Image 1 (tube, rainbow, N blue to C red):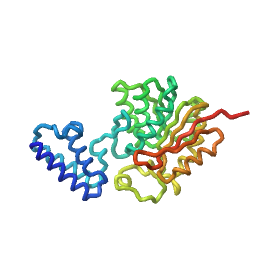
Image 2: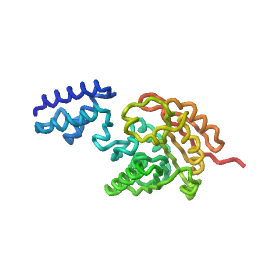
Image 3: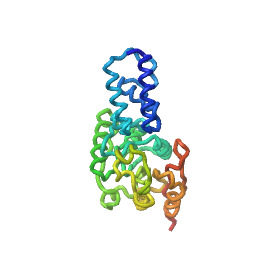
Image 4: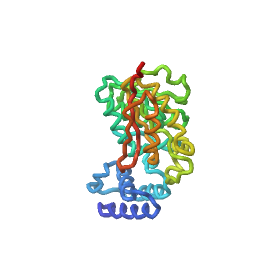
Length: 291
């Protein structure tokens, strides 16, 4: 198969994905081709001749994507910062929107030596692993309650450590169980979370409705049924000067900061937009109570 034939195959795949309603058809067509060729997407134009059998494999992958199976389920991987995590049925797929939260979180602890970081609602473990890779001196604790997601997180953390990454502690359990994290009260430098936050009944893409676990996506009528009580958990964990960052729905750019600002022990509340300019996460820091 020549480079021209490869180009045509990608063009045809792009058209098919566009007709199926995929939001980024050309990008996805190119990423699938690059995955099957084991090359970077930017090197597709320099790919030498490929076997004709590759075409059948590529068309099968494109057909799956046209059925709105997530790209990451087809390739088996998702990315966040420097982290590559394994994903599939039973765990929420990390999204590029979380990159801005990660960048802010790393900046928040940039001057802290040997920081203690807790990632709540950790899912696949992507945030925890990305923090650990960027800050190997950090003690990172990932927390997840859902059994399906917990198995993916365990697999990813084990893989991270096999490849030489700093050990990450994974705690399975409900973050609202006071016994789970009581040993960390007042000791944590950074709390991160990408919790469920979509209001029930919100229309979502098939990739979400059919493939992301509902427990990782939806959170009550206003989408705040997890975030509201999680604020108390995070505030209790933080030491004075410690920071938190919670991802939220793009309709919650005012409500989540207001919830944070209502807590006397939190200050410096800000909201931040994602790569598309939409409200995406809120941050705050712990202050010492005045006596």
